[in-house]
Amino acid sequence: MATCEHISQAEDPAPRTPDGCEECLAAGGRWVHLRRCLECGHIGCCDSSPNKHATKHFHATSHPVMQSYEPGESWKWCFVDNAMA
Image (tube, rainbow, N blue to C red; front, side):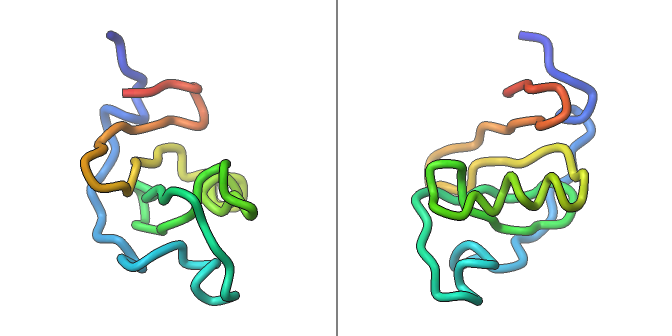
């Protein structure tokens, strides 16, 4: 499977809020699954969560690649190329 340039060049930053979605924790919200930005380490909630903070983070920052932050999952997603690895 071919992978996009963004995914192949993605970093591995430390999570900024290892215990949950950064915005949901601050606002007392809830999430379904977590995603980690591979540019800055932001932890945001997935699109199945009420606030979709991982996608909102992409739109606010243009950081292209996120990775699942769920135990046992390591897949990555590029918002720019709509590609998964």
